[in-house]
Image 1 (cartoon, rainbow, N blue to C red):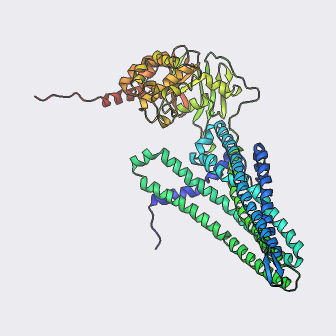
Image 2: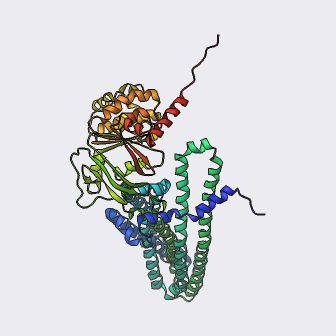
Image 3: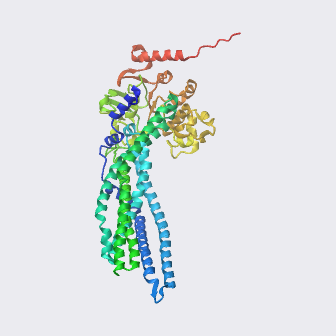
Length: 628
């Protein structure tokens, strides 16, 4: 009987099936397809550690020599350590002792050099992987906001963490191991041929069977590891999103549904991994069978040679070592191919991220203005986040004079906050222009523009550290006293000092140790310390209670004094102080004027004002009545 699922669940699954995959979204944002050939991109990563790689290769060559010395010592003991005589064979004690000593020295040298090789390779790996992590981290900071809007956080984390780690066995261990395998296979073949051509051909006859198997195995492994890497990124992404949204999940009681979704992603990953392993699981047994056949053929051919006096017993014993050294590297090539397939699969995704160019970049002759007066102009601006969703801003024109304070009001979702994104050039309008002091902001450097335009959002971000460390983001060279003086100027010093450790209080991840209001106060001080010419407050007081808001009205006036201020707010006290009020409706400028002018018109603003007054009245607590 088919399993019945809720209709909502089916709709969600159908919607997921119809949406482009996460990897397709990344390719759309990168404007390039996933690159399949990775060798030319991976080799340059080894440039900074080429000396260490050369040292490891040299050590591997010495290790190969020690490997081939061991069969030689065994051969000498068998052929020369037992001397034939009239009463049978006698042991040449001193000679055997020397051979055993040489054999022990080979083993000791192998262990010592292997340790040195691991150390040097490990140091090289740290350099290469950290360089790549830094490159990914630095590049992520340059990407435009649209990339983060459409890419899951967990996928970005996976690129810089797990995916980079997966490259280490390929980049650092792979080249020396490949060289060692080739040397062991080649040298053992030459030595086998020098002892007896029939011995060599008895084993070499297996190569035509093994090489096609290697090629097929490499193709299957390459096809397998791409989907495996993609499925791994999916459940990692889901894990990161769960950690970030755990409060919402617990509040809405969606833990069980979310757990099932994570289980589905894990099962999908496991099934993909198992399917790939099934396709390639035949290779180790095949190489084992071929190795056994090679040993059997060698014993038969070698035994016949000993019986005919063509090969000594010591040569046959050494040949048994050589045949193992000849076939074992061919088996190791399977592991190397699989490692290469896994490494290239994740490298494709890392380089896809690195190939993603920022949507918004500075033009060649961009200007970094040392100072600005603070004139802001939106000139016929039309903007849509996606072409198929329609414009959010439509033919919007607004001019704000230097030092003027303009409030922007309107219903939620009508484009107010989008204006902030356009002014700070996190997005660019499809039509029209945004100007600062009469200069199109596309002709200014992004760093210079954002240095002169300060923004305080409703949900600002604090970084792990103390309050002073967060304030120092806006004034890197300021002393502690100068930072504290900024808080005093806004009259919020006493609130911050009442925290458990005052200005040295740890704010926690994203400021989680502070209340929403306390976080906003820190962000207001941070904006004041940056001293921008244009200040944008986007619902900056919406999360602050009325009593606290009264206390910081002076802070807001102080913050806006002497600079252009664009205030997006819904609280009457914040709006009424503005020089002018702009009313937005469906992305257009519906009304513009002072508080009194707009009330007199009895238009959109008057309706918003009346609704606010009614809401405030209904929110007031009823007077308590004492009963005697």
